[in-house]
Amino acid sequence: MPLVSILIVDFLKAPSVVAGVHSILRQKCSFEYEIFIHDNSQNTENFEYLQTHLQNIPNVFITRGEKNNGYTKAYNIISRLSKGQYLAIVNPDIVWTDEKAFEKIILFIKSHPEVGIVGPRQKNPNGEIAITVRRFPNFLVQICRRTLLRNFPILHKKVCEDECQNFNYAKTQPVDWIQSSCVFLTKDLWENLGGFDETFFLFMADTALCRESWGKKKSVVFFAETEVQADGKRCSDGGIFEFFTKKTIRHHVWDALQYFWKYKNQTLPNRNT
Image 1 (cartoon, helix red, strand yellow):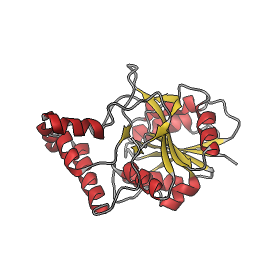
Image 2 (tube, rainbow, N blue to C red):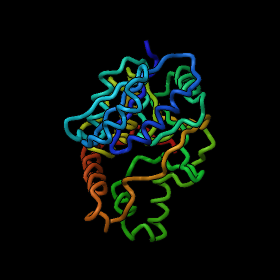
Image 3 (tube, rainbow, N blue to C red):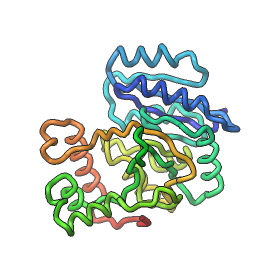
Image 4 (spheres, rainbow, N blue to C red):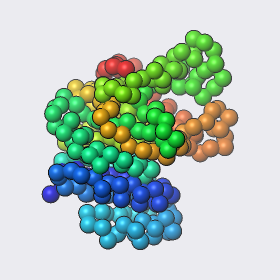
């Protein structure tokens, strides 16, 4: 019986997924794991690439959506197939550069029952640390981030605080929320939280998940004792002018509005960063 289930949702990144899976297979850990890959691409060539390179590997399972179900629904679909006591929510571009990463993260969670969600440090190919930690979002600050308002000194300071630009990525510590590009949690907590909220299509579901975890008295922790590599590309990058030319920006804005509506008039469960 696998202890950990690694869940990966792909959208037109089959070669990256294959590289990531092979890096997982090099993990040196004392427990079994399984890997579920859901192809959301609606692209035959992408799906066939996954099948050609991965389908004969034990405990690797590939599924394909009849339509693009969105980030949240796709992860919920494959989470229901998983058998592990722990879940790893992993983006398709993640490569595991530390062969003991799984062992370190699972040991940390086991040793800290008060912890709900754990995410390791991420580095981009150029060696820069990826900004994966944030404060819980503020509506005005979110507007400033995508407009020229962020250049005003007072507002710029608020944006920097929101983005945790002075965060110490060398220290393991509680955080408000961490991007779900690579996070671990128990399956019990995942099910208790109801998985990802499918109100969100692509963004903000990780913010909401962390908020709900804090609400259950389970902390969210940035884990500095290991790291993974990501491709450094952010599909939400862009300002107000990209709203009209970039579909992912529109998804981000819509999901953000959904988030603020969901938590309107609610107090924050915790603030640690």
